[in-house]
Length: 332
Image 1: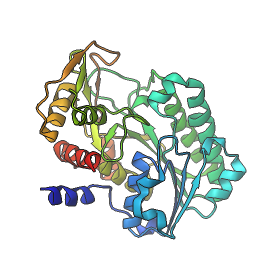
Image 2: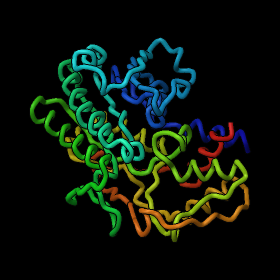
Image 3: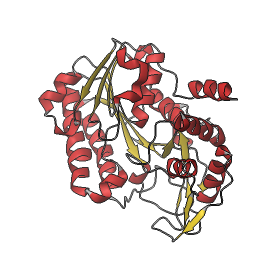
């Protein structure tokens, strides 16, 4: 069974790479999603990857054997602290830029001024540098938090966005920055609103504070998983390999600056998620119920029609399979 899960993990570690993309640069390359994107690109025969990461929430070890690959050019730096000239010098010779680095949602709650500096001002300078360096296309990772909705049926890209957090406001600003640079400078852009991404290499202590990772960690430590409030809050989970597939498709096709949800379209309650996590571990521990928090009564599920129409994409990884591979990665 261990071998079977190992083989499944290798097959699910990202979408199919494409040597035809030419030379690629990735901000946030050593992080959760970025490292899986590096995996997929190298396995697909990419010509060259320029990897930029501050290592605040990532680590080079996530790149595994690719660290010794001569096609990898890595640099440790906070992209938002670099000048346009420095960024342009780093990006020169790049065909596609995947902009994944950002001050994350949970970090932004405590440091809202930094989310503005990094996610808005830094992104503007990065786009300026991409134009100056002759980059052909930028794939920008926005977020479900740009929608702002916490209830109702689904979060649709056609609805008027009303972000409620500094992070969501900054991500929506990033979408507008992308639109501006396409209109003013002719650089091709794509904006993907990622929903709740999960998978191996995701950590509870940095980046996104995942219910999935925290629950696995508690169960492995001999504690019960925790549920806040009713546990009926619904989230839309997408496996990281499916997200990488969407990123690669967005790099290949003309999407325009319109935002595209990268979601499963399926809402899963916290009760369902914790139950599936407990089953994946084989540890029969009843959950610990805690007081309701700000998520009580929320439902954050995305529409998926635009991704299917423009990218030819849909989430294909079964939730149970994704959990199993995530658990396997945490036990190593």
